Length: 219
Length: 114
Ligand SMILES: Nc1nc2c(ncn2[C@@H]2O[C@H](COP(=O)(O)OP(=O)(O)O)[C@@H](O)[C@H]2O)c(=O)[nH]1
Ligand SMILES: [Mg+2]
Ligand SMILES: [Zn+2]
Image 1: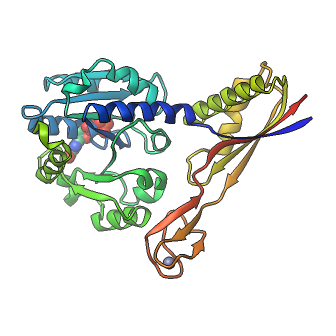
Image 2: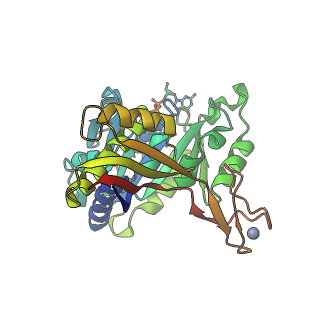
Image 3: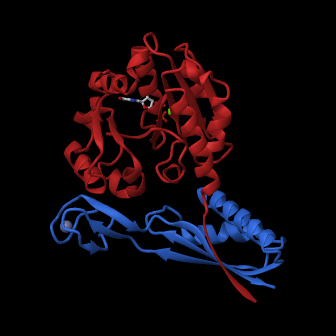
């Protein structure tokens, strides 16, 4: 009997492919955002509102991750942007190789901004780097304001937190300040946006911030 | 459930090492999982059993070591074990903390038959 010291990262394969993706995105001068939330927090709706504002001025594409259906991809396609649907067949998160295959459908050098809508899940996707520049976690006022406390790893790795469905604040028991404090306690560098993807309230800040991510030469 | 995909990655690594080392039978696989990584040990154990059953890893034991979170404060330089989920220095209350451990997801050791 022999004991071997191994010390190998379990997700190394994913990390390696993510690094390839990141390199490729960088070459293409492309900003990539990974959108993460529980099911129904409003990722697709926010994307639709965002495309309405940006798709006529910038070259935007979308990768849609979903467990089963291509409903979201069809919602996005109505906005006349390139979209690829990735069906994970029960898988609870996107992995870097799926994104690599998906983006092979795009001409990356001809894009400014790429959104990846991850599978609705606040646990698993936190561990899987896709090669994105920024992770955006979306919570909505119809969920508990203690969401950050329940999913600390996700809030730890996220760069940006969108609090969606603020149009419903009068009807729900959601304390925005509490949610922000909890999230900041986990990750002091988080940047917040409060908005309603339904009414458009608060959307300007979000759009302005997205524009600031797009390299000047293409604007 | 990403425990299944984590278990598959573990099996892949074990098979690679067995091949490199020209070993055949593995008795024990030791993995280190940080407390901050959302992997449920029981669930990982279950997935590992499910996918190794009837294979050359079928009678190997999976040992899961949980790695507690440790952090160092970037304001006062002291080390501590944060009261998760918050990362606040208990000495000076700074939130500028750097994680030293607790995010591992590694195969650390294999016990093989020569
Ligand atoms: N009231 C309200 N409903 C919203 C808002 N954003 C999304 N929704 C609704 O929430 C549901 C889920 O939205 P969807 O974008 O599909 O969520 P996803 O699963 O994260 O992609 C849909 O019925 C949307 O119309 C919002 O800002 N306010
Ligand atoms: Mg959706
Ligand atoms: Zn301190």
